[in-house]
Image (cartoon, rainbow, N blue to C red; front, side, top):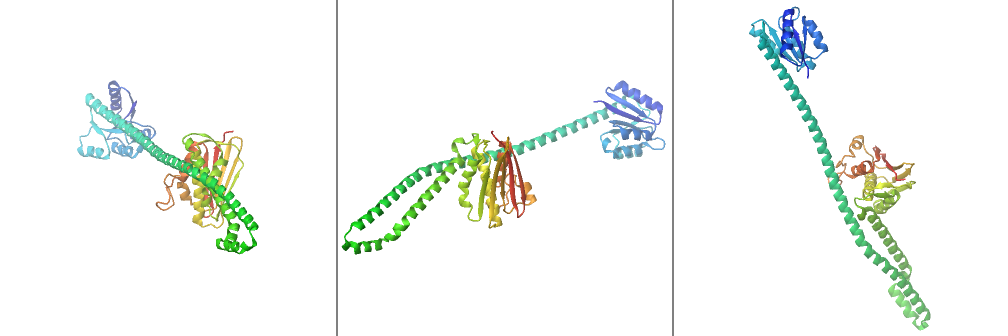
Length: 419
């Protein structure tokens, strides 16, 4: 590193002598000399000098005034100023040090002392410059460590959430598997009961027709005591309701198995969004109540490449948020509209609700992990962040949220297709 030195003195002889001695004994320096203090100020205003050797007593402007000007310049705050004086005035030197002078040299100067003080000033400057560089390096490394720590925390959160999701997936898949077998027994046995009941009713009617007239009173009494007319009318409807319930349970179990997809945890495949939405609609049908209508318009035939569990969970989180937003608003005619379209390369998804919406402050924070507007214990604040991570980071798409208070929320997602 080249060290720039400026010598300011009203004696041209001193200037020439100082420059000659410095260049003879110190390598890697550039020396400029200035005869008038105003010229020194003009030069310092344009250029940086690491070392300034400044005469105290000069015409018009003395060295202390120049020193005071130098110390006001932020650009020159590291410059080492050595005062140059033939006066033996302790008070004047004290003023110089008070103003920020680094050292002083008496005139006439001895060569060895002159060079020693300049070398010391150069060493001090280079040391402080090295410290400054090291501080900047430490600050940069500290910032990098902070970023790594933030990324590590996010990774830890993602891993914990992944383990939770995987655990829920295994649990859901296990429950659905265990429920599927007894449900099959119930369905087959109910079918047997329906057929048996039809046979019994038919047999009874035939026996009643063949019985003697003298037994008619007993038959009528039996029918009255057993409420036969009611059973004959209602039993078919009861069996129909039971079979419809079994069909509904079967749909839920199949949707749960498809949602958890235990055999595909961590695996990626081509996923049909139509199937995903159908499964979710089956799972949340009971949450919709009579106030919320969920409509889906799916015109995209292409698939997305990813993990079924991640994609299903992300859609489910968004739709559940929409349901909760409508319930908070207490909207009588709640609506959730899902539209999925495509072009040659992308699939476009819009999920829109007419719920309570979000303020600008909430909108700016809603993607942060663990941020929730719900009371403590009612929500983890992970729903939208999980969806964002899935659609943006895992599937390499985009996700944008538009929301207005009391008007609703629209979530726009663009994903690459697997055409």
